[in-house]
Length: 362
Image (cartoon, rainbow, N blue to C red; front, side, top):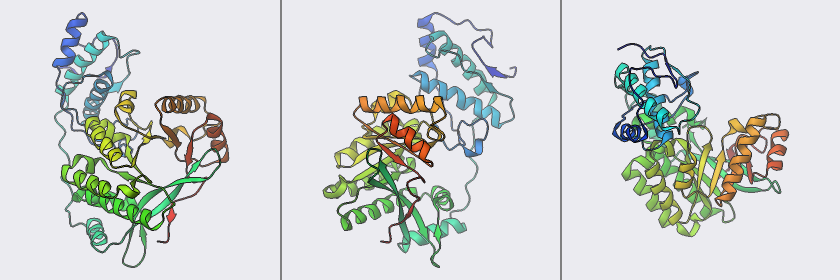
């Protein structure tokens, strides 16, 4: 089979794009399975962080688009010169059928991805994390989330930190990979939840937000324990916001929705973090019982001078309001960005302009 160098609307194979009913048949008959680590970033795969699995026929255009990109990414990793040029309208069923054909061709070129053998669970970083969890040396730094209307703190986002035996503070970038390698993500998320609940008990006027990982939601045991703790603390959980990342919604929307409904049932709020970073569709937003959408900082940077970013933020803010959700802009770093967001009407703002993460001293 010849090499595929690009994906574009013109046929690449000697195949007839059939009428709509045949194209739909192709769509539902195609089974996709992609195990792809590293994400969908063409320029810098190292920075990409999405883990995508598609193990059923893609039922929506956005899923198919992701599947095609994922397959092309595998081919790229193995040295095949693949270039993506999207069709102008994926909702034209003939183009959908065509992309399935191309997807099959690329998959024939790209053998199933085999993840690298993980490092031993007793490496120094993992041992450091295990020791900190056992000795209760995890703590939470807090970063303020500000009301755009009056510049008052409405809640604090809690960010995990590890305290070394000698008192040095270790940032997440130095222990999260170890947690993932050693299967400790669930334990780490539960520790973060317990620390946040303890803070809410001590300080009866504050409101906090915490992050939960895709690994915890995917792990039935860890997820059950997490939700049990949250439900047991319903007396204070109404002051807690649980943030799920956009990649969770991409990876398994059904699981994310179930988790979200359980969080809401326990009395806590649910937020979608880093919106705009990945490929989350409006369908995903509707499927999740969200109270809040946090707009990725990439759209906040220089928003006062970038019409494309401004248009995106305006659209998301209006969509959120229409669905009864709040919006928070992330990574606000300048007065100009803050003022542009105020003009748009974004409800909350967060970033170094208002304060860096810091210890609560408790």
